[in-house]
Length: 259
Image 1: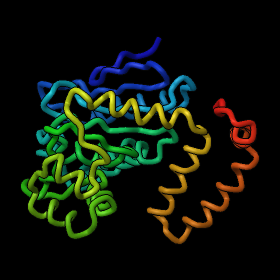
Image 2: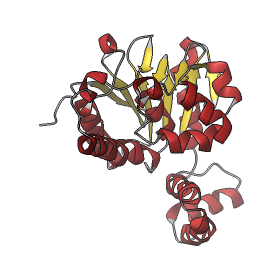
Image 3: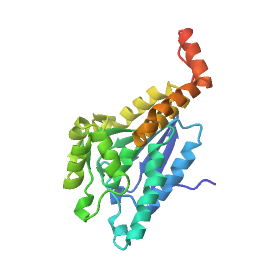
Image 4: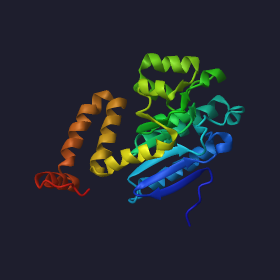
């Protein structure tokens, strides 16, 4: 019997898994139990052939995820804090970052601290006009611990990333778009439909090619010296896939491919 999620709403329809962090009374804050459950959900979706993409959002109209549960931090030793950072990065953030199916963060409100790190781990970010984003950890005497210091500079550049991290201040959706932190900004009512529209375009393309593209882009960012070699290998491997044969046949026959 499948376990019912405690902290999430999970719905699968039309090839898309909708994951909603469902703690609106806590502004959808992350804690170890929430992260553990998300790990389990992602593991199930990775092997689910009925799912080709994911939309991740927060319950309510105030927050995507407004950070971590600070109460959990109070009694942590440095060793425990290191383990918390390690498990959060490896089991959730890195899992999202390397997920072989497209993952879109639908940022419906505050995305702060661990919440922004969660959004940055997704492949694409679409924000509501009312969304606000930031990494306020320095206000607590700490720094981001779920990959924020690494992923934010990749998206907005070193200068803007250091400004956001060192001031701890929030930016609005318009600034986030200007700096490349989000791909699109839309009215609140159009947030999920905009994400669905993006995924529908991807569902018309090769699933195996998309997975290979995610992998090669990530390797190029994390290990630049290996990026070109990985691309050449993935390009060559694609020639031996059913999707390649179908894609070329469809092109030559002037029809849409059946991926």
